Length: 466
Image (tube, rainbow, N blue to C red; front, side, top):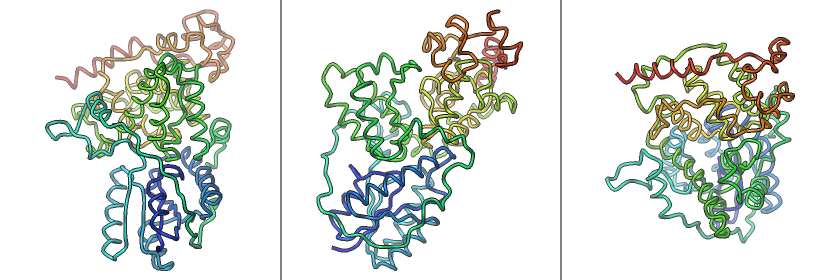
């Protein structure tokens, strides 16, 4: 009996939503609520585009499946929750937990205040396979290296039993904003192409999972690093917005035939890295701003705005780098291998502070988790926990030849190079056949000389090791 608010955050789904399930089990009346404000963990315009469409999808699903209206409000969560609790004689608030430091503190404060006023407040885990405070080593310390962390997690990788909402609760009528009034869609037309590549919402997430299992998993380990094969799952934005439970994915992977076990384990490894990123953010909350290895505080980063803008615009003169950055701008997504290459190029060829790159990714990636984005950038830069060695400097030309051997990915995103054959396309400046590109100013010359920059980067690294 009674009434409850289910406060949606980064859990924009109905299936395997613990807070919603528990609320519908215990209460007769349910008010689904989404509050838009500064602490929604949205970072850039790309993600506000996704949020707009994801909320529309959730609103429709709640109405169609449970006859509930999603209430949209903008402002401070405590104020809005208190107002609704009082006005509609509601006695409880349920939500699924968030793991960013500011939101943890906010939720603790809200829970403390509402509980002191005799409201029932309950939270659940809907986002991670293992919450950060549940995994420690034998010494009782948190893991700083991924491999032993993931090995520990795999000891308990059994998906929970799937429960469905059996009884439709009654709706609580309340004032709701119109989502159009929030003006979430970017005013610039750069996001117009997103809809060509993405279907936000729970239905889109489940379809992507099904397509991945049926069409891509069989070759995942072999082809996931090759750009043009497009053999990635495309689930990362859906996971970020909570449109699919990670346990739903695990359940599908572990029930596949034995012949797929290696491919499945490799994909689960990626889910593990996502959990590990939140794990590190929980234990090292300053990771988004400070070098984990403080010796990098003295690294002589260069402040070259021209180089930064060329990198952002995909105009570096290195085809594989430019292809990745243009894919990012047009689709809100970038192939994982190219993320690694473009990040390495920024910090080790251009010697630009990793935080500048992380912020650009945060603003333009649809799947930019606060944790995963910043942890991954620190890993590439060499200043994080368990990092890639700083002296591991990717050669963009060799990487391009290895993972885009025919140049098809480059041709897709850098069309001014589409007439070049596979021998020339990876480093056109080295061949007279491509001189017309530079004479006619169709494509920029490389903004740096990679071998020289590699040498300078290693010299800079030595200065902080003295």
